[in-house]
Image (cartoon, rainbow, N blue to C red; front, side, top):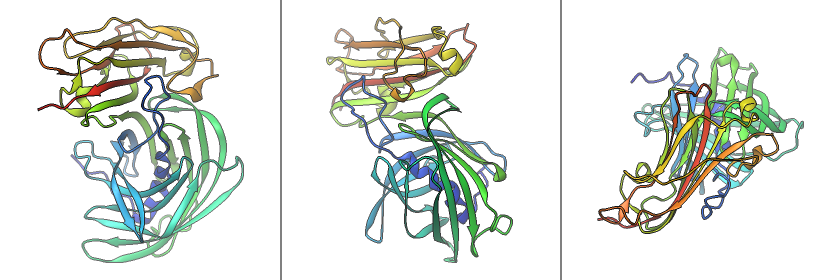
Length: 379
């Protein structure tokens, strides 16, 4: 696979720093009807990137471990633009102090270079609307192979435009989104001559459950757009586990699927204990979502071979995405609370929720699903 063009190290501070906002608090994992769990250690967010060279690769963001810098522990967020080799990519060092406070220390591209800020820098998402903020990030970029270092700064001036906007993303219209706009100005010896001292316009959209869902730096043709989110919890440890996923079903496209086997690569779901499986559907388009029309899809709840009976019912309220309530959308739900005690074979099986586009589908549908089940030890 062709590798995307690299982003200049100091420029990347201004581009990648907002990904710190991908980390937010966890919700309850004990109730299948709880709001969608926020970004956590087992979350994988799928993004579509727009890079300066014109490439539009899909990539992922996930937490891959911890990094200690000057005695402070930061979580390492892997931003991988190569879906075939997700181990490649850039690692951002972020400390989530609370649900609204994120401290950024720098990043590294393993084997290539590191960019370490001169001190930790903190960003908050709960500040007042309309009040300008300025943060100056000084950093040193070091190439691992040569050991050569350069210094530079990124001056970020921004304002929160709104605490509640509706924005179109790659997985549909999202409401309850915070909108930020501002500029990034690069200076110092490491700043690219083409843009040194030039304020670069930036816009960001931050969702309370998904983190950064959209970003744009138009002058450099750089952007990000979230298109899916999945969390497998702890699928290998015996005991109850919750998995969840949100994505888009397109007309004539691939099915949406949430399955215990896909998370564990094992048939380790307990067939003798009830699994609770919840599916929420909504048209991705906000006008159709307000129409009350049932999405034309084929939903299936089941195990490897068997299926459970269910039916979709409408609701004016979202269980998973409560920030959308009050927008006039209609949601469609199916809930299954079943075990597979009569299924032949050993105790370990797999539970699944699938959503396929019907032949009559003409508009995309957003699917959100959760399965709460008991994990058993397998040989």
